[in-house]
Image 1: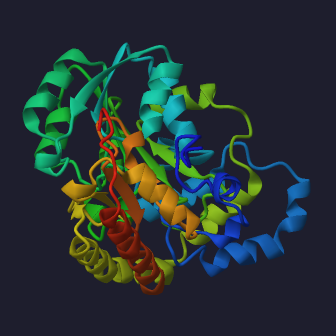
Image 2: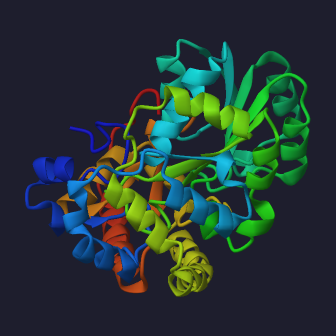
Image 3: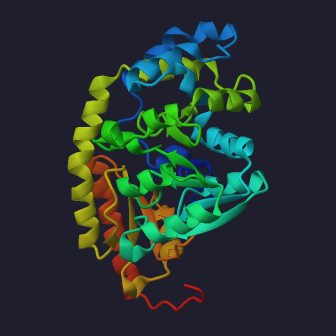
Length: 373
C-alpha cells in the first residue's frame, strides 16, 4: 500500500493502517506544515466561538476578505475565499475552460487533476534537474504560443524553485495564454511582499493568483485559501462556487491568524536558519538537495548507488515511525526522488539519525535493479 494512495502526503490514517500504531505516533515529513503548529489565536477562536456555529457562516466572507485586503493592500472585491487552495484551483480551471493548459512539471498533482476534471489537455513544460528545476525561457515561450492557460507554482512544489521574474513578466504580457500562479508557499519566503503577484492580478483579467492559509499557519484541517483576480473574474468565479464553501470556523480562524505578526516573524527567522542547516546535513548523508527558494520543504535525490529505492526507503522509515514523501508521484520524477518537510531541530536530528542508519543498511544489503528506474 502506497502512503500517497490519495495523491498527497500527510495521510496519517494510511500510515497507521500500513505500519501499525496510532496516527499520532508518526514523525511526519511527508507533509510540509509550519512545525510551530497553529498560533494561539486558533485555540482562542475554538474556545470562545463554539456556540456561534448555531448560525450560518457569512456567504460573502466579508470580514475575512476585508482583513486580507488590508493585509496585502489589494481590493476586497478582487478576493475570493475558498475551501482550501485545492477548491480554488479546480474552480478556476472549470470556469476558464482552457482547451490546453501548460504545466511546468514536476508540479503539484492537483493542477493536472483539475485540467482532467474540466476535460482539457495538458502541455508539459519539462523542468530539468540540471537546471535545479527552474523554469527556462524557451519552453515557456513555446507553451505561451500553444496553450490557453499557463499554471505555475511560485515557488514550485516539490522543488521549491521560484519562477524567475523576467519569465513572469513574459508570461503576464502574453496576448495568448492566461497566467495562473500558485503562491501557496510564498509566505515562507522573506521577500514575499516583493515577489507576490497579487496586486497585478487584482488589476488584470488575464492573471490569477492562488494562495493557501493552511501551510504557513499550520491549519490544514480547517481548509482555507483565497484567490486574487480582477473583480469581474471574481464575480464570474463566485457564481460557480459551491454555496457555503467556507465554514464559520474557517472564516473566524482566518481573521485571527492574520493578526499573528509575532508568529509570522518567528517562523521566518527559524526557517532562514534551519533550512540551510538541514539541507547541508542531508547532503552530508549523500543526498543531492535541490536548492529551491526558502519554502519549508526540500526535494532530494538518493545517491547513485541507491537510485530507484525511495519506495523501499519509505517502507523502512515508516516502520521506524518516520514518514517521507515518495516524490515519484510527481510527473517527471523517478523513484530516486523524495521530498522532506523542514521541521524543528530536535525532529530534524531524529530524522537524520533514522535516515542515515537506514541508508547505510540499504547500502550493506544487495538489491536487484528495477526496470524503469
